[in-house]
Length: 248
Image (cartoon, rainbow, N blue to C red; front, side, top):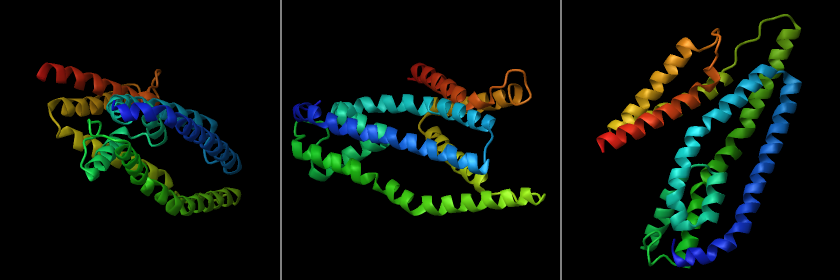
């Protein structure tokens, strides 16, 4: 860690704690609002909410481990406070590390090198912050229209059920599923070209997912369908790590 970063690290911790605390507050408010909305519309049953919580908790295991590994490199450049602040809020440390290098390159210095000054630190931090602004802009543009669509769809479903009619199927569940499938497909294909260990990890994840749904899916005595994503991610990382050690 550069000496200037070591000196500034202590000053950054109050801001990091404040920002991360605001994220916890946002999570609390979002969950409370979502549960109130669900109580009014009956969009999901209690069992479906429990399944979603379990699947979401398990799905964070793989990305969290990979984020920690990459965060070590960011800590060495930007310090623990900035890394904690950015990773806790954004969650994509690999992207943050790219932004750090872009900021350093703009000044013609090496990120974390002997020529890394306080000015370079500020520019890199600005690059990390400014580089994630499109996420905020996207939320401002898309969240309100999507919320309106969901609300109207739920009202139509309730009216149809009250009238004894069959409600029209909504595209919204498929919308979220398509986004998840697209993201995993893109990452899987992109990782497969990085070498044999990566390809084996992807194939292992696919095989484990198929196996779990085939033999331990819904209807079986031991239903592991809610845990399939987390299990496949962990098995893929294990096989990829072992293959990397063997192949070199």
